[in-house]
Length: 139
Image 1 (cartoon, rainbow, N blue to C red):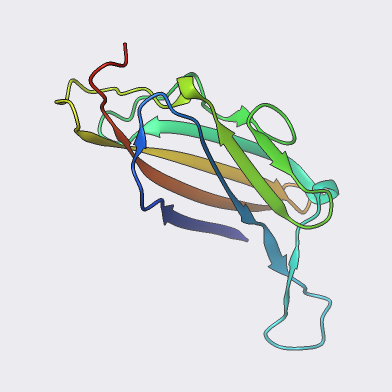
Image 2: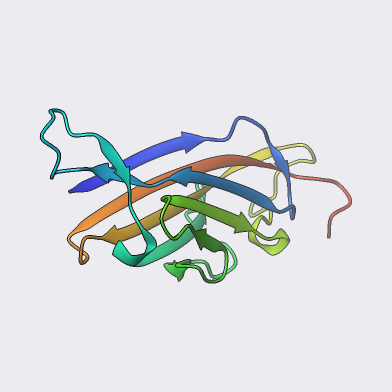
């Protein structure tokens, strides 16, 4: 099973500013006798890999070398042991302005989170897009 969901953060962040976001990772409980099956959290023990790719949408440039970076309770990711909670924390250097836009211009960055579970047979993908504002005095 492959799931891919997209989200848009509805506020712009200033360039070179940290950003945190999260979601709950759930899967169908196929052992359930009800239909449709209820959703249950994916536990940390079930996760084979968790990665983050961060890129600028207009140029497709990878930002701060975050291309399939490990986030399974490492680097910028925290995953709850039993509750399916996934939190991503981006740092200042993860949100630079890529273009030569005017002061106040916005560019869109996207974080692609990919989490493989069920022995790597199933992958959950979520894209989180957000606007980054070009500030005048940031070097």
